[in-house]
Amino acid sequence: MSGRTLLGLLALVVLGLLAWELRWVLLVLFGAVVLAVALDVPVSWLRRFTKLNRPTALVVVVALLLVGGWKLGELLLPELLEQAHQLTLLVPVLIQRVSELLGGVAMLKSLEQQLMGFATWDKLQPLGAQVLGFAGGAANGTIQLLLMVLLALLLALDPRSHQRLVLATTPNHVRPLAAELLRDCREALGGWLAGMTISATAVFLFTWAGLAALKVPLALLSALACGLLTFVPTIGPTVATLLPLAVALLVSPALALQVLILRLVLQNGEAFLLTPILLSRTVNLLPTVALMAQLSLGALLGLPGVLLALPLVVVLQVLAQKVLVEQIMDRW
Image 1 (cartoon, rainbow, N blue to C red):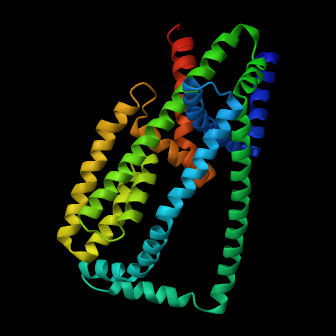
Image 2: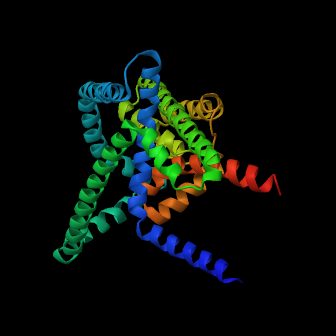
Image 3: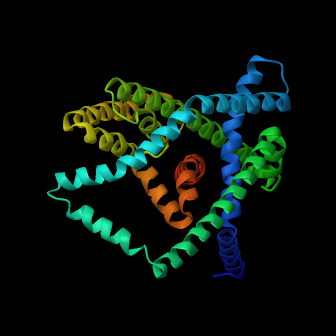
C-alpha cells in the first residue's frame, strides 16, 4: 500500500470520526434541508403562477401556513384535547377488557401491583431524576427544532447561493455531475414530501369519515394518529390501527371487526393505489429498505433518526442510482 493511499484512508477515518462527533449538527442540518425543500415546493408553485420574487413568495407561503395552522388548531384542538382526556379515562377499562378476553384479570392485578411498587420514596427518587433528564432533553430538542426551522428559512430564501457554495467544494470536472445530483435529489425529495403529505391527508380524512360513520368513540384522535403514522411505512399503519381497534373493542367485538375491515381497505388502498400514483415520477421506496433505514437510524440517533430516515433514504437512493450504478457499475 502506497503512502498516498494510506493517507487517503487515514483522512476518511478522521472524517468519519468527525462526522460521528458532529452527528447532531449534521442531523439538524439535514432536517433543515428537508424543511427547506418542503417550503420550496409551494414557493416554486406560487412563483410559477405569479410575478412575485422569492423572498415575497416565501413570506406569503409561511404566512399562509401559520394562519392555516392557527385556524385548523382552533377548529380541531379543543376536540382533540377532549378526546385525549377521554382516552386516559378509557385506558384502565381497556386493560380490564383485554385481560378478560385473555382469560382473567391476572394481568391487570400484576400491573396494579407494579404501579403500587413505584409509590415509595426510594422508587420515586430515581423516577424524579429521569423526569428532570426528560425535561432537559425536551428543552434541548426544542432548541434544535428552532435552529432547524431558522436554517430552513435561510436555505429556502436563497437556495442558489447555497447550491453554488456546494458546487465550489467539488473539482471542476465533476461539477456538471454534482449539479445534476443536487437537482435530482431536490426533485425526488420534493416529490416524495408532496406525495406523502397528500397521502397522509387522504388517510386522515377517510379514516375520520369512516370511524365517524361507524360511530366509533375518539374518531378524530384515531384518524389523526393514522394520518401521521402514514409517514412511517410498513409498521406505521399497523400500529395506528391499534388505537381505533382498541376503542371499538370497548363497544363490541362486532364494531372492532368493522373497524379492522375499514383500516385494511384504507391501508391497502393507500399502499397499493394512492401512493404509487403520487410517487410514480419520483422515488418510491421499497418497504424493506424503508424499514431497515428506520431501524438503523433509530438505533443510532433515536426518534429524530426515525423521523429523518426516509428523506435520507430518498436522497441516498438517487445518489446510488446516479453515481454507483451509472458512473461505476454500468461502466465496469
